[in-house]
Image (tube, rainbow, N blue to C red; front, top):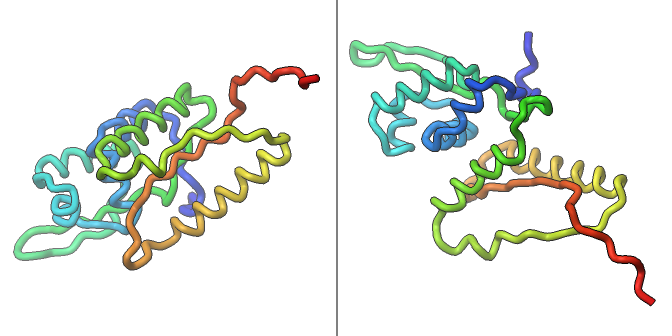
Length: 175
């Protein structure tokens, strides 16, 4: 049996196509909070049941969303859906990576409320490889801690972390 605490490693074209659609990307973000019914997803995303049903099916076929429960309501069947895993990660051999994540983050940023610009900055740090590993571990720990539960009164913020070796030429020491 798969460990549901381990991230789902994304590697198929169906998974990337499924996450590449803005509504499905938003749907995944909604389901990160908790499992939801089709009606709850429809209300949260401001769409129609038919549209949401189609996109849930695409996510299910890609292995990203699963059916968790069904119950009879007013002569019909209500279905509840959850993410297949709490977190996703990219397969290092998938051929996509930073570009895929940057496009997703940019789509969220551009549709975001005004006033977020002060939270966006490109910074460069001069670190040893050991310092870079330690920083990445601290950031991952912080994200895991804050992602564990939705706090009352907290608002969602996107966090795109990419600790990468920058292509910045090094000047020789000055005289």
